[in-house]
Amino acid sequence: MDSLKNIIKFIGFFLLLFLMVLLIKIIPEPKHNIHTSYKEWAKQIGLYSTENVKVGCYEGDNEICLGLEYENGLSGYMELCELINKHNKFVDDNLNYFPNDLKITFCNMAGPNQPDISVFSNSDYKRLDIEEYIDELNYQKTAKIQYMCIDMKRADIELEENQIPIDVPVIIMKSHDESYIPSGRVFAFLKDYKNAKQVIMDFWSEHDKDDLSKEIHEYLPDVEIYDVIHVTGQDYLEKCQ
Image (cartoon, rainbow, N blue to C red; front, side):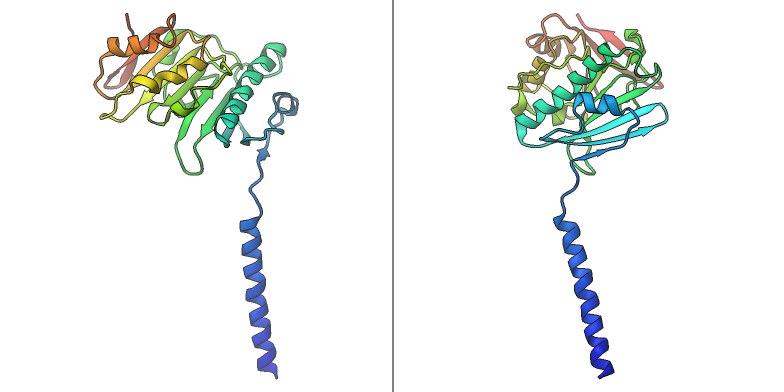
């Protein structure tokens, strides 16, 4: 009899363990996982109420980092763009809200354990890898998003119909694949950045900067274009004609 009771307890334990594992898999990951002391900002720009964007917000020493993972295609991407613009408007309307040295970064994530598609930041955030040359543009410190850095191999041409212009002055296009040169419709995303002042090409592959500049100017005719010159120990910008 005792052995039968032990067998029943043993089976019951594993049934309970199985149910717990099943529940963990069924319960969806929370869409809004936000940890910040800047509650009013988070509320005003809509971090708590996105429908098509998963939001993770974490705060460190002089830094706010947001991970954004959009779903439902164009609808999700447009909502992500709105967050960037609402943040910039909030800064314009509340100039003394954030400290001057605060780094604020929005990461457009492809998914868990995958490289970011693009990163939006107000500073030379370490994940942008632009600190060696970006100061040459002489932008003043601000909490507004000033730089958008995009992995050109991950640029999604299917989202080129986005009708929400993003107010970011500097676009940094990166490709660290020595066998890949961006061209053609892959530049179509630039239409979203009608207020851009500079576009930076940071490519490791051999490329014709004049030909690429012509392609970029098809989307942003008045923008200044710079090429990153990679030399041992120091990268620098060279303005294209």
